[in-house]
Length: 325
Image (cartoon, rainbow, N blue to C red):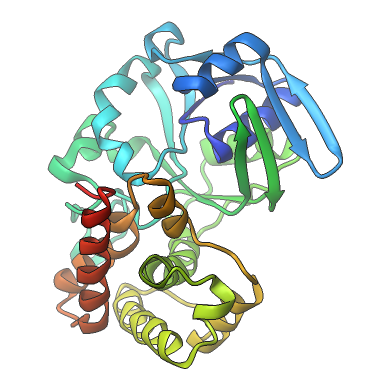
């Protein structure tokens, strides 16, 4: 089984290191100083008190790697459409594209059934770049739970979590899903195959939709924005609007809104990824985490007044900072 991880930053690097430790045939596509460090010295993974080193095949040009059985995409959502053409040398007749990207996935309505089957989402796949360039039949969904960071080029520090939930768009337990699940399990990662992966996508998105933009606007950590009366009510209103959309699409939430917010508060003084991107001057995941839910509101004819307001504010904040096109 040949596995290529496209975008071997923190999460991709963590997964690659674990697979390489287990003896898998794994390669990575990366760039910049991180790539140069991996090519020169291999990949170093720090997990608590454990510090390990693996040699790994790392390239900037996918053409040097050739067709793969699995291409696991761990880029940020807005970074994927521009590189679809670049990824083509990795894709053979039987290649599976594993979409380990935050937010609402571009393939969401493939295999969904019902009146929205085949609907395409412009906010996360402008110009149908992925739908046409990969083909939705190739895709295997993945919800990423671990937290990690690139502490310096070539070095990934694992913070917490080891679960990568997998799921076919149509909910089936396919051979390809089970084979990848087994490979990840042999690498010490949890990779359950879920028949209702969209439920997990929404549970994670529920928090990202609200907590991320509010933190970028206020610079507050999760414990503060989830307990302050004002920002808590804004987050709750956004989540209620999202829940109405999701339940229209047959999503089942295992917890209620208030419990989900309490869970955010219990994370503690955490700076969300969107706030970290703003402070670092990196592009922010506004479209995948917020604008995509607004688009679903339009598709399902469900009003999203609070989401619309927060989206307008965080978009302008990002544009002023030069972190949104």
